[in-house]
Length: 72
Image (cartoon, rainbow, N blue to C red; front, side, top):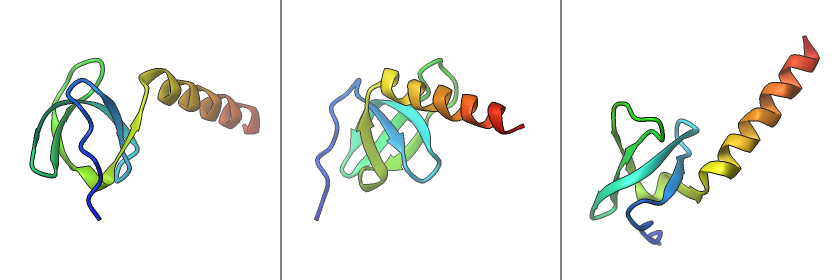
């Protein structure tokens, strides 16, 4: 079963690396992603991409960092 290809500009999480990227192009079932703040782009199979918003992703990372800080 093929996943639906996210539209250009959508934010996704590459579930293989837990990195967020913005879809800049897609070819077949392959997405070309760029980090939100710029940097090197990378390819991600559509089945490994989970659509998210940048806000939701960053919020989860802050919660995780705060939890780790309390454990130290």
